[in-house]
Length: 233
View 1 (tube, rainbow, N blue to C red):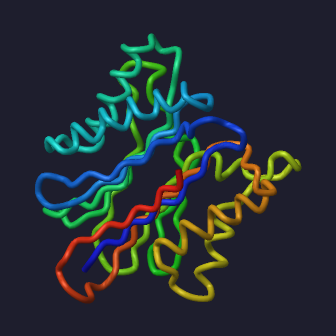
View 2 (tube, rainbow, N blue to C red):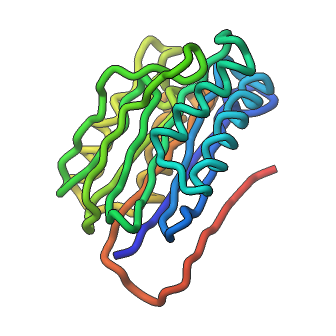
């Protein structure tokens, strides 16, 4: 098997910085984790919050701390730093190599999506953002690794797309229609979701939007690990 990770993100229209932060970190025993945080508000203040949360999480994951414990520690750290006045959503998708599982950790009212055999399972249990209270726990879903599994997480800007015109984006429905025609790559999924959101917002996004897709495929090609980043300045 092999893992493909894709990220697509854009900042809110007419803001100086995105309040979303995404980082990828290798796990000590060969797996990988993708961490997405969306800081409260927008601009530089929100960026500080999301960066604070993500850095706490990836530092702990790199030291071998389990995902749920890392999420709780980041929440307590933000609560201590800002006295419960500021929050951030948090999502982690991990490939746990020793356990051969995909782990989706969620502190985010917006659902995550787990795709198995072309069927979309929304992970939509009630979930609170980090930083408002001490001891905030995440929702955790763990599934065995096998080709065809896809995990999708996103910041709430994706859901809010079209709200300027009184609408919203049904992420699950849009993704289901994509899967009816083909099995798209992780980058195709991320780009398509983001592009559709931008079209609903008339290319003036009402909020920061980030989409993370982690896909499990049959192994093909060589054993080289690769990562490509495109960062317009």
